[in-house]
Image (cartoon, rainbow, N blue to C red; front, side, top):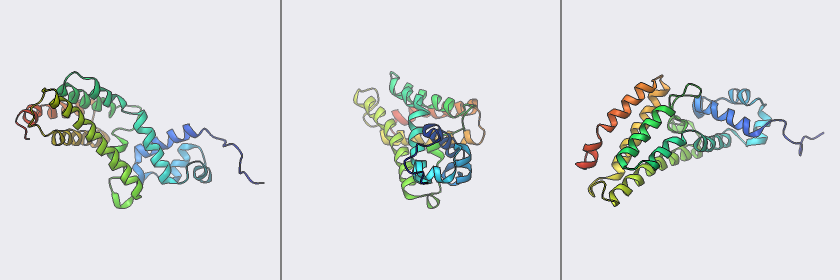
Length: 204
């Protein structure tokens, strides 16, 4: 008798969350179907029926991650009264988010799919798109500060945004390598020491 039309015998949302944890810890390449199905509590046919394929599962898990974890990082960026305070809070919130004891350390999006030849094009494009959007969020915050006269017109908002986004990516790698909150905070503090040079002289 065909199973077509029967309700799934598992919680799809919970299974997706569990898959996200595996991808977060292991990356796209390192997350085998065996590891995914074991974590999700389903078999391979059920995974394919519910999510389509590993690529589609990863894309859905990545969107879940972006909406669920680390949101406080961007809240800190948006709510601070000045651009300098915004970037400082952004980096400190990153240090805290990336070093939580009950989740994989680092960022799924920063660490995911770095070997582009080994992952599907759609996954690579989605990850690159998210990372680019993160730079754009920083750039827009800096551009708003320039428009208000808080920062000089000569400041290259794109270059400064790229610098701090790159610092954040490095913090993700440090966290994944076992770096503590204190170590990550030291990186954040060091990066903020460059603020005046980056925003007053208009050059690194």
